[in-house]
Length: 453
Image (tube, rainbow, N blue to C red; front, side, top):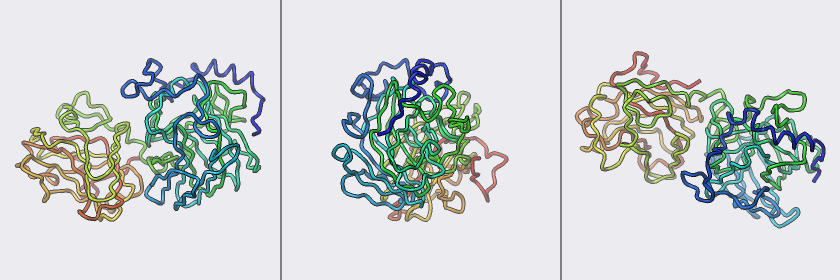
């Protein structure tokens, strides 16, 4: 390993100054949290050790699993083992370098986003590294891609990233890359990671063909190596790159995704999903990340739930993966809220479809206690919202979701599913669900969903 010993004094001084260089605006260290090993509301599990946390490589003590994710396989995630794992966008295998299975040999095909990541079974509390560094060794085996992003990730859009392609020489020798955590920032459309609860402490993604080996991935409080960007200014040598605005690959593999909106959108699409318009006093907020202080908050009456698939509820975005029949919904079998004030109004919904899978559409409805209302639903297909991992803001007339007579007692304020017995591979995400008493004046029945720019 050729870790540079230059810049020792500068790095040590920088480590002491990092708290004042604006990093708190980018990565939340939740410094008031003393959650210890409790996890839960007090933050993730505090990893062992006093200083160095070795996530992958010889002496690994972080409890993480090396994995790969392929955009062209519906963002499928597979663990990397000593037996080769081949997917459409990325393949990998564990090999022996300085120890047993201590290095990943990775091949990104250049056909969609390919991500190598380290995932933790339970969230990690990495708050103490807020002014520290991620360091790893990488050996290129092909041309360095133009865009290569390293991230700390909790499923897009909760991702803080740093472009690192320019830091690689591509010599074919082992190179040490040291990343100031303070300089890892969310790309447009993403939100800054909270180090107190981290599910994926390392995430490396590109869409371009790239073969490499990687090992010795660790978190450090201090380092003697020269970081890839200045720890104080967060500028690359020559001041050429602002890691907070570089679009990267698509900050989103998980999906997610690195670069792009959750798995896969370009950073200039979906950037407004976390900036939903403020609601007014007559509105009902069901699952809303925007300003709902003036609205009636009904989220406690209609919690997120699902059956038949995997539902992820993180950072005010719900993601649903369906291997077969199933649904995501807001509500319970015992809910009976009166939503009749909205029977002539509209539902607001931000929706992103990664794949329709085998289903020709997504069927969106509300269920009254007299239901389920199988016969009344809005049909969402690729002509309205393409399966391109891009966020769309939709206005759906309530009359298209539930019979008016059933709005006085509602069990499920939102129900999303696919065509029965044809749901394999259906993957979508949604947020910012609210009800309005009247249909907005800008509603266009021919284009009920508009891409969020």
